[in-house]
Image (cartoon, rainbow, N blue to C red; front, side, top):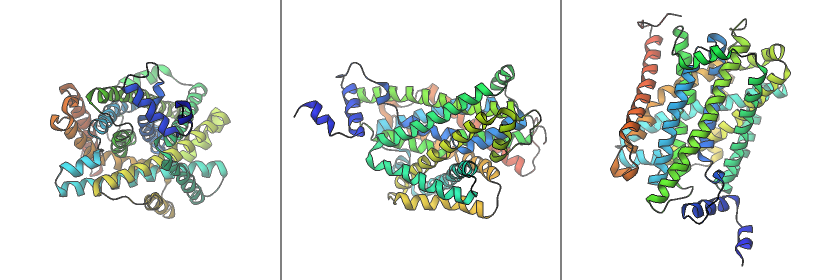
Length: 437
């Protein structure tokens, strides 16, 4: 049987693995970089989920371009953590949850699992609600019906996991491209003050105490606990390296993919804030809900802008909901060592979203608060990741450099500081230098 005939019977996942192995072995001089694209693309959807829509709309509508710097810093920090997570999976062949189970005492493992599960539920609340809101607006159906349709579509996407990693990577990649394209359209339609946007991107400022809640929400919506856990799982067995030279190549390709994928995600997030600032800040600063933003966009910027916004929201809700379920499954399996059927996992994580709608809680408020919960849960995986990737007995030659460790510690300090300010503000403690709302 010829090589060409043999390749006909291979799945798209098999062909991808074969191509990667040939590149690593030096047998293929010219190759497509897309062979190595996938894990960071999937992780990047967590940075463009409906929680981002909620926090970014509120940031732009109420504070204009003033909180763009939070988006920039959060995204740069996210790049570092996602790169470290991917490296952990490539070098050790284990994901972050499994490493925690292997190396930490049982009480710590159980504590981390509980925190991670709460974060997974908060994540799924945001993602599931986002898709439901999009379908509700598109089809003019009740939100509860939109949730039912979202559940079916998400489960359909997850079924492709059974065909290997490549089909799900391609589906999520297509949805990421749709989101990015929609916001490219928005940027061309909206009348943007680019000078103010430039200043807001580099000048740290928190106009009032309310901006702290939004800033923490932006961090929680950008650097997400489940994405940090998931990325290590996506790289651990994708194309196992046979020696350090192959691991070094895989880490290099992974870093390039993280840089590109999260740059796109960061630009999309900035575009969300910029669009909200240009459309709503002057005269419509009270716009704080996704539904209101959609209905207000049509008279302000036209049906094209509203349509692009809705399309991006739908793509975001469906893709991020599928990715959130994948991450939840990986977290549970890593921490406690057993796997449950995807359908059961999907049903369990949908319950909080149905409860929120049944209780009549404002959906956008629920989205923003879910992101605050994520930010508060975030230090746990970040600190665990830093502990493992700095240890030479685990990572060998791939252990973090001093500079990498310092940058990761600074990022963790930033997250903890924002969370502390939020908690103090919640309990009515005056914070010197921070204006009251």
